Structure formats: C-alpha cells, structure tokens
Image (tube, rainbow, N blue to C red; front, side):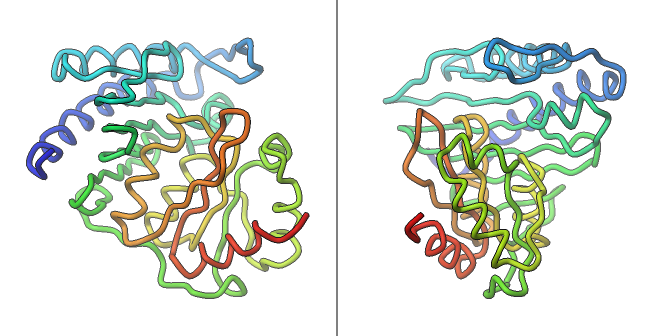
Length: 256
C-alpha cells in the first residue's frame, strides 16, 4: 500500500478513536465493572466504544475485516484487518485512574503497518504508519537516546503477567539489576516509550490487540520492538531504544 493510502487510513483510524473517546470519557469514574469468563474486567464503556469504532471503520473501509477484544472477528491471514481494543487498561479505567488507552492497528499479511495509541483522559494520541514516522498530537516523537540500563527508566507490565508467561525469572533479574525500574503498565507504558521518557519496556502475556499498534509505532519512532517466542497464544514484547532492548534481550536469554 502506498504511503498516501496509509495516511488516509490513519485519518479513518483517528476518526474511530474520536468515536471511542466520545463513549469512554462521559463514563469515566461513573461505570460498573463486570468480570468476563477469562477473569479479565470489562465495562459498558468497553462495549459501547468498540461498537462505535466498528461502525466508523465499517462505513469508511467496508473491505477491511475487523478483530476486536470485546466482539471478536476473523483474522485475515492473507489480507488486511483492523485490530482494536476500546479500552486497554480497563482496571485503571474502572478505578478512576486516567492511564488507560484506546488501541487501533491495521495489519497486512500478518504485519502491523499502521497504529494508534490514544490516551483519552490525558488528551494525547500517538499515530504512525510504516514509512510515515510517529507523531504525538501531530508533533514527531522519538524514543529515548539512553544506552545504559543503569541510568535509563525501564518499565514493565504487571508482575503476574511474567508469571503467566512463564518468565518470572526475567522480572526478578530486572528488579535486581535496573535501578530505575518502574511499573508503567499497559499501553500507557508503551506510549511513554514512544515519547522518549521511558527508555524501554518489557511487556508479556499480551493479545494481538495489545501489541499490534506498538509493533509499528516503535520502529517509526526510531526504536526497536522485538517479539519474544509466543507462549500459550500470548505475545511478549521488548521495546524501546535499540541499545536498551539489546541489553534487555541478553537479560531475557540468561538461563533461569
């Protein structure tokens, strides 16, 4: 697909993210939480936002398939599909913490080529596509220039996700060796990497919709995003400034 084609589709993705904001923000700090069969939380806002996003995407791009966290869909292995998560960080959202995101990505032939990370309560949106760079609210953004784990801020997902991914040992080594290790979780942490404040992040036990936008945005922001071997159908990412990612991968590869 041409750069112009992706730029046009980015505008469609942003329109879908706008629709999600309109559903999510009025419900922030005023919504009941439910627990799904897999033990994860969901709210009325998740479902309303995904419905609105699907409506926008179907109207603008009826030829592109849809896969969403709340209402599923078919993955077009040999074609194109939108991947969406109306609220990434539902636990934060449901407890009145403004560090949640709306995620949207376009995947072609199994490769994410366009991504949006929208932070509705913070008024920030990261948008990028393959060959087009990454922008925060329209301004180009880059990953950190940090090179040393001893001085960089490094983030991680919730510790229990390391356990579920079978890599508790990785979290323990990070806790022992990285002075500025901080738990900026979910896509909020990914956004901080894109903005350059956090040097790198290790995030495990992810679904496709958790990872796809980040997988295209980080390289477009000048960084590196490495997918670890999947476990139980889940994805693990190491993302950020290339020297830090290299150091973190060495730490991941150490014998348990």
